[in-house]
Amino acid sequence: MILIIDYGSQYNQLIARRVRECHVFCQIESPDIDVDAVRALNPEGIILSGGPSSIYEKESPKTDKAIFDLGIPILGICYGMHFMIDALGGTVKGAGKREYGFSELVINKTGGLFKGIDGKTECWMSHGDSVETLPQGFEITASTENTEIAAIIHNEKNLYGVQFHPEVEHTSQGKAMLENFLSEVCNCESGWTMKSFARDAITQIRETVGDKKVILGLSGGVDSSVTALLIHKAIGKHLTCIFVDNGLLRKNEARKLENTLRQHLDINIEFVNAAEAFLKALAGVTDPEEKRKIIGKIFMDVFEAEAKKIKDAEFLAQGTLYPDVIESVSAFGGPTAVIKSHHNVGGLPEKMKLRLVEPLKYLFKDEVRALGKEIGLEDELVWRQPFPGPGLGIRIIGEITEKRLSILREADAVLLEEIKKNGYYRKLWQSFAVLLPIKSVGIMGDQRTYENILAIRAVTSTDAMTADWARLPDDLLGIISNRIINEVKGVNRVVYDISSKPPSTIEWE
Ligand code: XMP
Image (cartoon, rainbow, N blue to C red; front, side):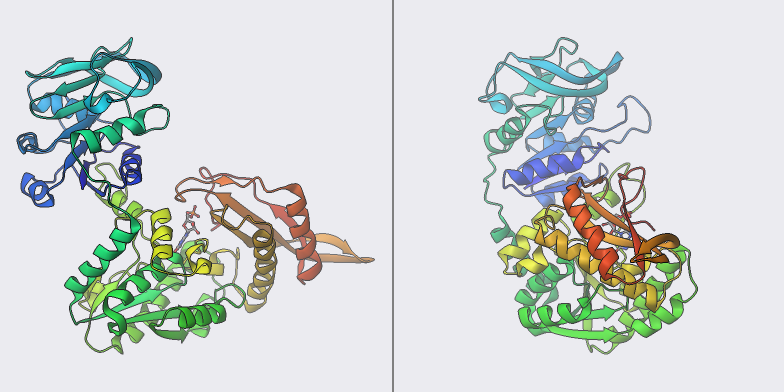
């Protein structure tokens, strides 16, 4: 495995992606990881990421210098290289002018990182500081017009540094350089596949859980379904899943999910219909955050009551993914772990003295889908678009009533049917309908109508942190609009949301 130390670069997830693409496992840790913890992880190599700080600032993040004496190959990228230079006795200075964008990298020493790389190749720079003097034992392996020390090596100690960013696509041969670091420098074997991940995860779950019982909140989404199937493969009937129907699901969803999950996953599942409690508590509520709070609280109460019925449960399983974990360890990661509320059962583990099992916490979303496929989850579940915990509750702007729920359900069903039929479902991160709290005038037959407006939201994204509105074909939008206005009583106007995130968000509330 490769250890990535994260100094706050916007690209740190990309480094992890590139390493995984080479079928090598990697883990991201914060700069304050101590040297014993590094030794215990026993990585084949270490990558020090870039970051926004200047190494000569007092508060800049640093790691114990003893990592340079472990005999493990290390690659420092941008700030990571500055930290290496500073720690080993060289100097780094503000470069006077920032270098940002493409530069031509001229390689003067091939082999190692640069094995098989063209002598002149495009690289992507993004830095204000540069290395001024090298510590003893280092030599320059590549330069650009503005940056003489653009790549370095310490042959004896197997230390490498690059001023540019090999992890971004703009560095045309960057992926090959990282591959070289893994195979030529670290001698990593590229055997990490979803098959091996599944096998190891199952063994690890068995070892952690032993003969104790595990409970899991099933949402019907891909993350919790994959978690359930994986744990089920490890401990069988010692896993019990709880599915809470909050009355805010899409048309026929609860029934369909129950059928699919029961048929497909031979797992203990408790289905709890708590729609009445949710809808009663939400009556008259229009503020989005208040809706979320109410939905979260009732979910907790219902889930806890169900969980208590499972005797001897010692573990709570969650489908937490890697981006959530990275956000919480990142040196500059802002708010701590942003975990989706349908996974997030808040204080429950402490309250019920449960320990957490999070087998997906090192995976990205597309890897979870690949794992789901690998362990035999059916396509319908593997390819489900994300659906928020508060469900249709945050897609009805304003008050949630049975009538409005029913209008939104019907319209959403038409939208999804057309999106699927026309082959867009898997291409879109999410596609859904939103019911607005205003009415507009229309004409149907010879009658004046005064009915609801429905918005359609369809976005592309890789991680929901940013998203673009989908350029769906006019014809398809036309069919969807026609069908909704004709088939769904209570809607006489359909609009298409053409805002991206940021500055908008994916959901309207
Ligand atoms: P936004 O609207 O913030 O959404 O751009 C980003 C992603 O998160 C989902 N989302 C939620 N998921 N509980 C959830 O479980 C929530 O309260 C919630 N709000 C947004 C949203 O569907 C999108 O995929």
